Length: 325
Image (cartoon, rainbow, N blue to C red; front, side, top):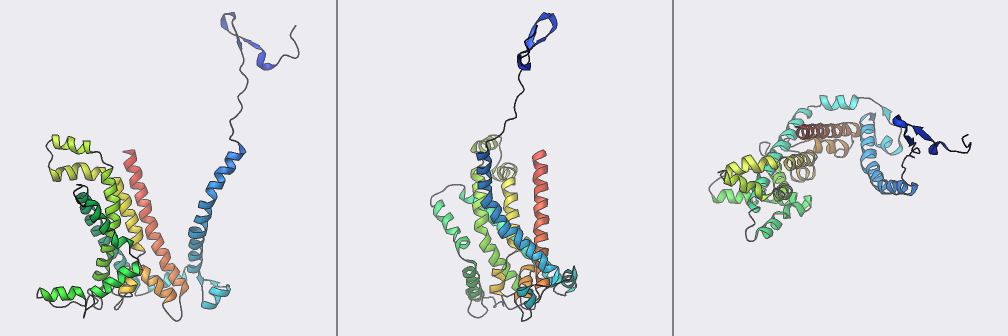
């Protein structure tokens, strides 16, 4: 007769051949201690608070501004009337929209192309580790470390039509002066040159770090196969540098889309809107007039955010395809 106090865990289970197997006790689900969970939330709290305070809330406020008819009084006291997409329609119908979009695209793409190309060339040059290489790299970081107001003011002085050093150099070689900042044909070129100069050090630093991460054994193997300098770079170095190049271009794109200080200090978007981009147009609508148009200015800002988001999604998709291939 079985003992009634016998537990289910100690009962024998008959198997084939007369052997008996003891049933294993049920396993309890592993759970982390409550103190560990609280510690994890404590580490996440500062990051979450920062994202909400400096990203989500400003984004919400900008969207709210673009969907309401804000005046100076309603901006301070509240109670702005909901206007839906009227501000966006006003922006799209504005004669400034077309030129501002064109200038934003040209300014961004030309800046990215030259910043990346020059930065990559300098990164390859400094990767040779010659004498004074570290010193020269440090000097190339100066434009990146200077405040933008200092850099833009310096370029304004250099490109001044009457007393600028650039026109003085042109006169020395027998060329006439150029109205860099006051001519509609040259104003966008001027701010683009200044932005390229400021962005080269960032590309240099990131791409140089990527080059240092590539093993020298790969280059030695390519040399043994008979690859020359250009073939070694194009078929070995550049493909291995592709992930670093992609993130460099993405960060440069996001930064260049929102460039405001350089253009505003040098030309204020003029003359005759010849160097106006979405960033300067948004500021001028919201803060550059006696009667600010907060709603349309926020709508232009939303277009900038949308452009950056689209390119960010494209980058994520390209990276996902590369990881799967």
